[in-house]
Image 1: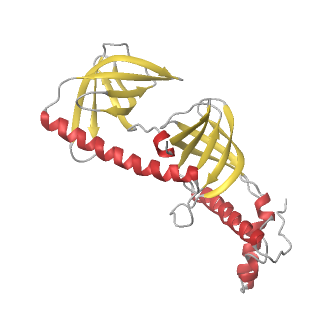
Image 2: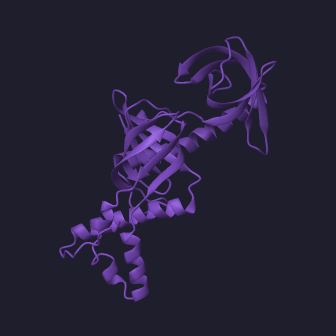
Image 3: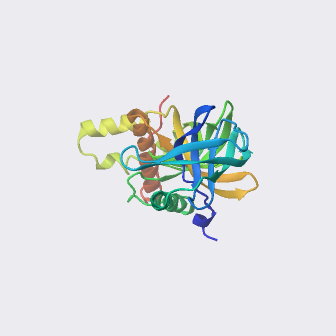
Length: 277
C-alpha cells in the first residue's frame, strides 16, 4: 500500500448549518454525494431526526441549498459527526454538486500527494515552500492542554509532526517551538561567509548566524496524516497567517541547516561560528 493510499481526506467545506427553530451554527462538510452519503461535523449537538439545511458553493457564482435530516451521529473528542439523509434534489442541482465535489477532491488529492511525498522524502529546492529535514521537539494544543510532539521537516508553509494521539484532518491547533540554535554553530564560515566579498554583507551574515532563535507560536491546521503504530501518527501541518518576522526566522533556520550540511560535506573544515547568548 502506498503512503498516499493511507491518507484519509474529507472535503473540508466550511458551512453554516441551519436547523429550523434551533438557529444556525458553524460546521464542516466532510462528505457529500447527492445520490447517497452526506456527513458533516459540528461542536453542537443535534438529535437524530432534526431537519437541517445548508448552502454549498462559492461566495460568488452558483450556490445550492441542500436539506435533509440527521439520520445518526458519532463522536470524536468534542465533535459530533452527523450522517445526513438528504432530501431529493433537482437533476440540475445534483449534476452541479457532483461537479463541485469532484473538483474539491482533485484539489485535495493534489495537496495530499505533495504531503505524502514530504513524508517519504522531503523534496528538493524546487518547492515554492522549501522543506528542510529537521528533528526538534515542539508542543501543540488542540484544546486547553499543550502536548509534546516532534518535527520531522519544516518550511515557512508548515511542518511534518509526529504525535502520540489520534488527530483528524481539518483540526485547528496551535504549535509552539524553539528552533535549535545548535544548527548555527555548525555553519562553517568557509561554506557561507568566505564567499561574501563585501565586508558589510559579510558582517550582516555573521550577525544573522550568531543570533539565537526564540520561541515561536503559530496557528495551524492538520491537512493529512499517516498512521504509524497504535495512536502514533505523522501529521502534515499547514501554518495559517504566518507573520513576516516569523516567516523570516523559519527561513533563516532552513537556510542555516542547508549551509551546515554543505559545510559538513566539505573536505575543508573551518572554525564554526558559535551562537552568542
